[in-house]
Length: 272
Image 1 (cartoon, rainbow, N blue to C red):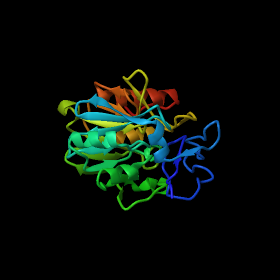
Image 2 (tube, helix red, strand yellow):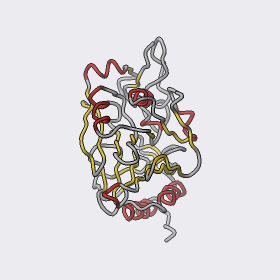
Image 3 (spheres, helix red, strand yellow):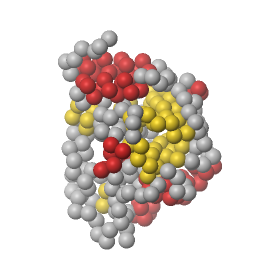
Image 4 (spheres, rainbow, N blue to C red):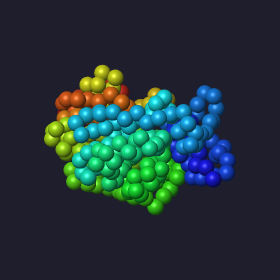
């Protein structure tokens, strides 16, 4: 039986003889159902008219996206440090991407920032030899295709490979997570954020939302928790969830400044 993929968010579901009546993730207020109504595809359908876009994204980082754009258009990131690590995932898994990841040194494990990026994570794990998928346990109920490869972790932070630490920051989802790579940015540190911390269009600042497409902001307490979660880590660069949406210098100050700006905008005075 096929594993259907929602055409709006790109998340793959457990196998079934026919598509689900609706996508649980898109039916919730942080996401939306496409204007043409609920539509589904499969991995085989995607492979027929899409391909992986693979390109350097930063020092030691390779981006993997989909052409033409599919779902919400995010990219995954391969880290060449820590024995090879995959951050976030896409709905399309094809031979070109798997071959390139092996050429880059392989992948020992992967982690996903939040449910909107779960996509075809189980397919990625199997194509890469059954590698573990680290998800924060607070988002367990949003997993539409469970698998033995999924490792549900809890707490505030978890080092999953040498110099690679998952940080629970919450906000966008209860389990929203970012990744700190100590060896990133040529040793100055990099933060990989999906949209748990959204890189803004100016690529000098960031922002924080409960829902980006539906424009629902976070409250002051949630923003402060995010900032407090990443404060102990040093990072020069921030890599967001879409190709090119990166802050390439002064990443730590960018987060702190952006949080103060956000809090002022919603009528809250920062603690500093």
